[in-house]
Image (tube, rainbow, N blue to C red):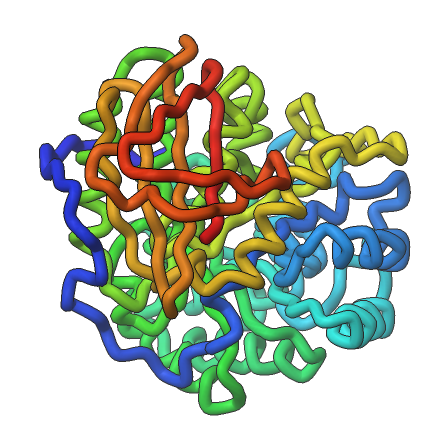
Length: 445
């Protein structure tokens, strides 16, 4: 989690972009109104296999999922595992960059899954670990100069990740080998990569690498990082980590809504207009290490889900099991299967949001964003998204008490569909609204 700095930049203006768009190579046009579903294969079924996950494709399609992000499917290192040798190890300790983890299945299984997913209209991306490798990766023996070493000549581990060793991007051979391995995975049919700890890899490598990948086809590139320079390097989407802490602090009363709005506005101001931002309420890291969405947000978990799905620049994320909803922390290094029970109580909620994103250009990542002032801005966070003559208005009660309010600038008029109530309502300037604690309303024009 990155430290949060508050910048008091409070504005109710219209964000059509900040004018500092970076040029990107062959941008993937299918992403702007899309969404991402993170697949934790190890925990998805009792077998953790590619074949068993494939059985879930029809229900995910029905829910409205479009981009499937698979955590690393490459073989996992066996030497130096952080728990014990009998545990399964970290996905992110790559033992072979051009193979499928034997625990998940075969390369043929993977290619079959990608083909099946494509046939159903999904896009598929996989996690890529460019910063480090497992200790028993063949590169360690065959190319010792591929690794960063200390003054004594020992390969070093990044941070406290003692099960991996950091790669050395001063070495031209490493750079060429890494790009070659990524191109290999494109031959399996995938549509892009989610790049782990992307900020730790040099910008000039990413610029060259992404340029070469996009010469093959316009792949989608998601960076696990929260720096504007990642977009200049060619990434399509970056993590909105800097909003994660404030979301939790808002629930706990450690931050006011005015401060939260300031942090949001600062993010909008510093990122390029064509940036996509990954908003989410949980993912594999958050769930395993920082707590479930229920531990972090309590009764506010739905309100923040609506926020992530409808915010400016967002191409949002849903994590494996949120559609149940999963209420436990999934263990990271060992087998801890998600408790599927054949009931997906949250699926209708997410489906309504996902399908609205797909059908309405007002929720495209690049659609205009305008904060709407209310008579109760200490608790109510209201905003409008607009594009192509379509509008969506979102009203969120970011407080633990019932709130009554009016929207002040007169934009709420005419007839609008209430997304979650499923009926139209007549609105006029000065209409009064009420929202229950941590409540939400989405109006579609």
